[in-house]
Length: 113
Image (cartoon, rainbow, N blue to C red; front, side, top):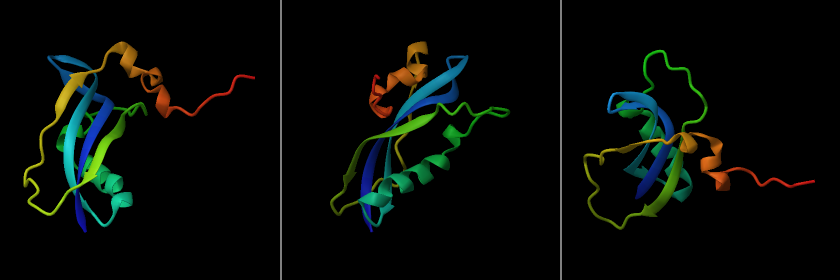
């Protein structure tokens, strides 16, 4: 098994910042152990699902808009891995950022008839 560093971006998660409720985004680095590079994202998603900071608020109905993107994944050379995972860097999502138009490269290509 090898260790990997994953730089992850999250968008449109339910949250509250500065007393205002609404969609929030985050950046976070997670270190995960995996048998190969094909298993890394699955292992990182398992770690994120266990994060109390990402638990939905009481009574929240999922909108299907929350997404995570792996900005970078790199295998680490032998050496120590942090025992404590780094914290989240949170930001508010602008109204324009909340819709699917924020990531056109993630949408399937369309063909005009």
